[in-house]
Length: 265
Image 1 (tube, rainbow, N blue to C red):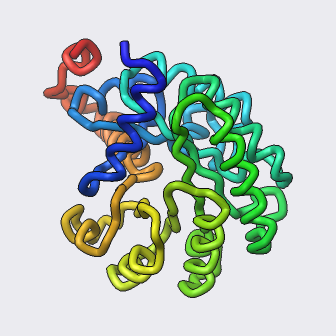
Image 2 (spheres, rainbow, N blue to C red):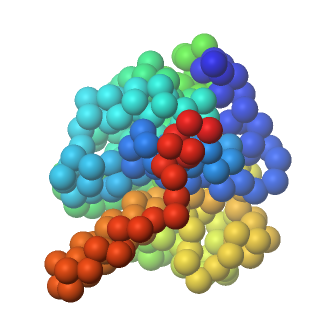
């Protein structure tokens, strides 16, 4: 079994090499499948995990996420980074606690965002940077190199201001974030502008109209898919279930994949 220190070191090393893909499993089974397919690291998805609980994105609490991380890290030898939303509370010490709790559960990385789900707004930049600083301090107290990602949520929440987004990511960089992330960037120019402006590795949320090579050429070091794989799987289920309900045809249940091979590899 790979130790947490070894996972943490391997995860850091991935950011120092060429661009890498970090897919987002929604449960232990999908994590094992993604490991069997050769991916080198995994990241949780808040929306995908909430779906497994029958809730909308933002509907999971810190206790839920900690237990989720325990299951994922027990199921796979890959490094796991955790979508910690806003740290499950507005105060800096809550962001710090979220880092400590998921690290205790086996994670080697995690992200803190600047969107307040309770109030439905983006934190002022100073408040947001203070929260990142507290999370970074909590990460530095660990006995392994925890990789902290600072997230600027403008583009997902009605403020597609590129200059403000870059200013926020600069502030999070200075506050101690190891990786920077602005989910929702939709064009190569936007991706390139963010990557060029910063001194730390940048995670880019996959854009379906672009390729990995094109996003990498724009400067990304890490590419995640967010809840995308969850919704691909759910869409396939809904399509098949509707076909059965509408036609009575069960042939859609013939699948070429032997799940045992994926789980046991």
